[in-house]
Image (cartoon, rainbow, N blue to C red; front, side, top):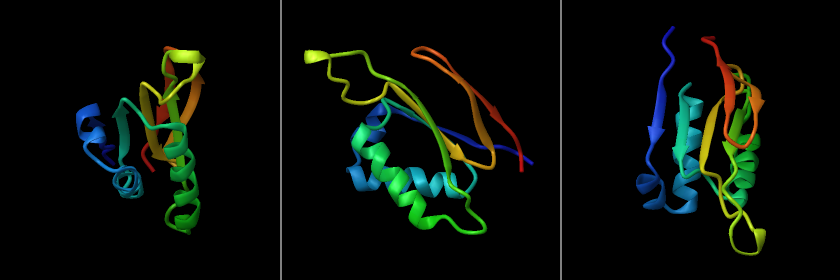
Length: 110
């Protein structure tokens, strides 16, 4: 079985509304793709993505696995969004290590 990975530019993500981003990501992951977002999602968008995912979990879709590099601290040490986010089907993607500059994940075909 092939594993498809979609690498999405920050320009494309920034051209979408928050709702469009979440639907775009969730539709890709539900179809079995690994989605990598340059620029990532805000913490609010990540929370909404998890909430939306939970409403769509069923026998065919077990949920998502999500990892991201945190952004560098900005004004007043506030982090606005991640630098990169990797999202995949929970059945296929398993994060084994994550720190500020490295995400290691095992991607397996179902």
